[in-house]
Image 1: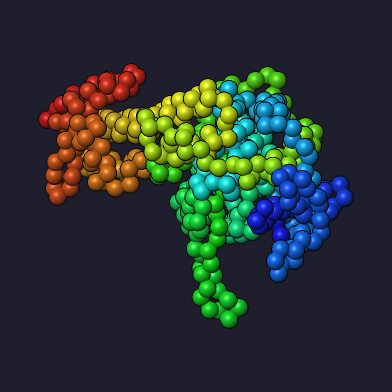
Image 2: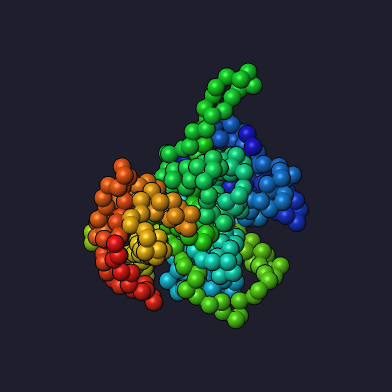
Length: 424
């Protein structure tokens, strides 16, 4: 049985890969961190052997492994090494640097939890989000890199067979069948026991649906955000637009970065051997003043944080992130609606504008706007105070609502707005 990972009783088995010797093996821990590397491991009636070193994913570094376990010292020392590495190659805010370091630890013991949060970098072109994805990803548990344009099938198979950490770059998905499949991975991948079913056929062309396991840590880099509020709430995010690149961050990554990362991965494998069976969800960290979803995504990470002040700092960061994310999305939509209406009513001859026309204009200018006229109508009435009437059988906003539109523009602080006037 070619094997990547296995936990059986008190035994932990992990594939290791020595790139210099081009050789794989199975690192086996049976006694709380003590380990040895073997070529065959018998578990019950199964004889486990390592995947071949000639496997394309292994030989070409598409999926990364440790080379051998190395003593990791204590947890504080290991976190210090991780944060030093990250600080050398990527510019992170102080709180997010702590979050990222603990998320790396979380990735190595992720199977001790039933639910996981995701890590995310948001920012425009050239802000360093891909660099952040790479630097953190190099230290995570069995990382493999993909992009939003990747073929979906191998991602399903790699997650199901290798497990590990999915690193997804350029994750601003557009509408396509591939997008729907990738979103399924993100939606189902936060909770253990929620596989994605995909249609498969036997060699005899019989229908044989297969359940693909997609649970595990995931890190994404993207420019915007997702329309699905439930998915959005799963992310621990860093907005790279808010930071200027430090001058000491190398523009081009040096070759020794991968050597340093391998040394730390070796220590993290030893951390897994020592801590997997000791790690569990700390339900005493539930903060009753936080909404349930925030507690849900924070608890696995906070369960690995030992310092109470840092726990509180991370909680505050998540609350601020949540409030900011909702506010920014809401405000962006409201501003876009008001600006659209003002453009449409700029012509004095326009007596009314159909809600459908407003919706079409918004969908051309933004990807996360309302999807139906009904949704847009709710926003117009409830959030902007703009009334809708029937005109020639269609729902529309009349020119008589310009006073409400002007009031909303002033309330939203739209710069240099010129009040439109009601005309017949």
